[in-house]
Length: 346
Image 1 (cartoon, rainbow, N blue to C red):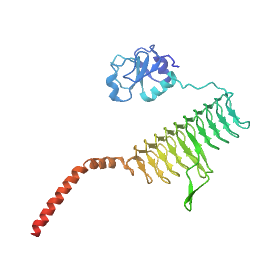
Image 2: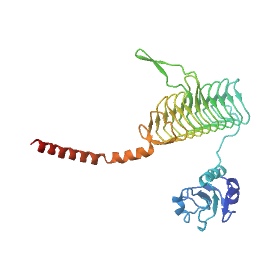
Image 3: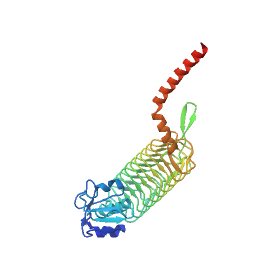
Image 4: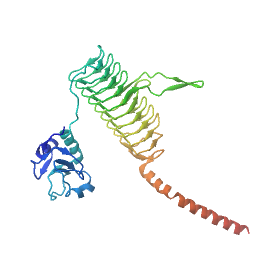
């Protein structure tokens, strides 16, 4: 349910300054082109400033230095996008279930469950698992033996968390993800593939968010690790023994092969593939649909298959677009060279 606030009350939350009527009531949020009376919107990209005089929003979050002569109620902040995120939390808080254990949840007598938890119907918590204070577990979640879930984490419906997985505090895991599935490890035995037992675990550190239908494999030995604050989008595959540093962003449909190390503050854009047993340095950005086949040792922006520095890739793309023209000119030069050679021979 939306919550109604005055613009002054919102300014107190985000640490902003009001220009206009601070008593105006705000009850919802919307984009600047779609907003109507009672909505608050924001402008973080200068290209949208042209909509500021026209918007029907009751208030607009803007950056310092924005022209205040537009006649709108403004909330002036340092970072409009960050402030808008805070406003969303105030006006549209996440709806969580009642803190109680549903009678249709199955909790093993030797599992440990903390205080103020919500465990909904048809969730299963196996022997030796530990569910810490404030955890929310939605219907159909499987929490395997000896799993640990840290305080205030939220596990959405139909997530499977396999045995001995370690999940930190304030972790969010969205629907249908699988944490701790077996790594893809086989040894060739004649013409057959013999399964290598996957005896390690997955460790998810604090403040990680994992999207829907993500798979993170347990280590063959040791740990697969997702570092503190890293955010993983939907439909991502993280293989066994991968280590991802802190505050990285892994976008949809990325695949990371086994025993690869990814640094902190790395961004892997959508559908990027990363080969196994390589490393990516801190503070790298890899463009969409790229293929990382060797180590990236220096921070920077990389694109392509195999990846190269983005500036080089742009130059290469310029050449690629001209290949038909270049081919035509090359054939013409070959023809003229043949004529010259025939003339000399004659």
